[in-house]
Length: 163
Image (cartoon, rainbow, N blue to C red; front, side, top):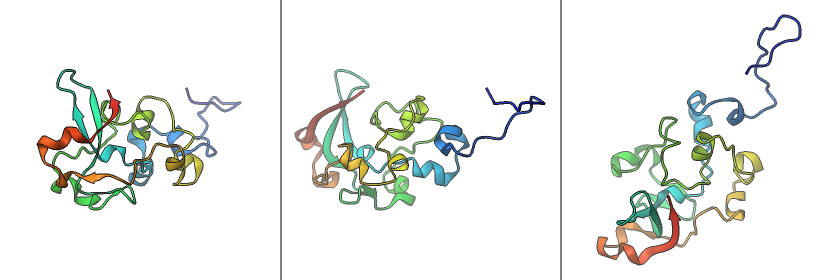
């Protein structure tokens, strides 16, 4: 419910002392605001294997997308990633709350679920390194998915599960 002024009951303008992720819905954010929500953990760029016996349960691997740079934790071809890797999922305001394979720590998933940003998120901490310090970022020792045959994928399961 909007705050109202003391005399005429007109809505007050939004408070400027609150950050955009607390005052806007995902769909109201500018492109720059949306992109800044990515904490740079790299976990969405890991290859996940879906459990054959339990649909919707995924196992993380130590394999990364062919376009992912584990040292910088960034996509090397972000603008054209979906042309090169057709199954790369574009997170949007419409799907952010439904992508159960995304890590629970993901800002898009957290905000879509009404949970706010984690304290270690760079927008709150002011430091990109806080993701690493919190233990959320991927390890730099990943293997590129192009280096592994399909029948060897299971060897790279790390034990981390998502559902």
